[in-house]
Amino acid sequence: MKICIFYFSGTGNTEIITNLLQKELSNLNANVIVMKIETIIKKKIKVKTEKYDLIGIGYPIHAFNAPKIVYDFVHRLHNDKGKKAFTLRSSGDPFLNGGSTKMLRNLLEKKGFDVFNENLSIMPTNVFLQFKDNLNKQLYQLAQIRIKKLAQDIMKRKVFLQKNSIILTIISKLFSFMETTGAKWLGKYMKISDSCIKCFNCVRNCPTGNILLVDDNDDTIKFDRSCNLCMRCIYECPTNAIHFKYFRFFEIKQGYNIKPIIFNPNIKGDYLSRNTKGFFKHYADFFGYNIKKQI
Image (cartoon, rainbow, N blue to C red; front, side, top):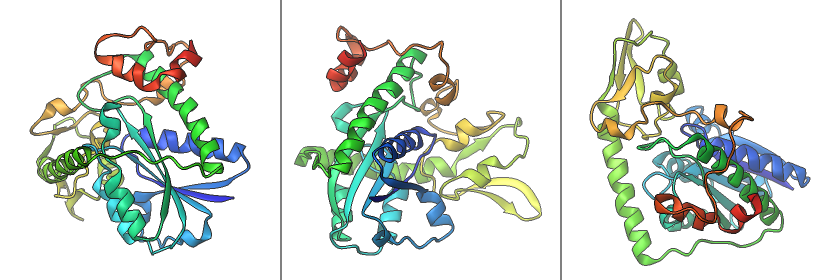
């Protein structure tokens, strides 16, 4: 079976679970390739979904919905009637199951795709709140368990579609519209501090091309109105020079990079349990049986 997973990842969470899924599907003898959505859009690569038996769409949840860049990508796809498709989402919180999947599913179905499975993985949050290392590690470990089960379901073409109530869909549309509109404004008015070393990593790595040089003869950086609010420029800046001019509380002060935590054997994933109370109880409830397996 030949599978292609197209994905967008701002700060790495979706990329991690996409790579996990690629590995698990490969272990089940599938031929799996992954492709970055931003690369396809920037280089204007023509995607031929007819070459694959299945396709997947991976993305982080932004304001209860897929980010605009994912919709831009799907709009570019050619119709492929009857092609089986699944979605793979990452979120920093299981609240409301990450929002409604109806909008993206409907768009894919208009393109002829048959969406048969929608998966949600909970990964460490990269906005507002810095989670403890042992919680971050555990969320990754729990994602591994869920992704292994997802790979088995995909190979069996097991149908699992999220139930989207009218209220959830309305909430998702409203918050998504607010986020998309606000991103244009917040992204336009980013600021760069004197610690900037003019490495221009932000210019090269911005997935939507929102960060630009004024002109070829000037090393002054400017911001446009196509920001995706993925936070990549903020967290990947080597000198911590990029920040929101307004609403800076979005940013985690210590930055965000889960990879050192994942690969540190001295960090134990033991934060959540069957007895977890308080704010993180809904996390423990979401994982349920998977936490019992860890214990």
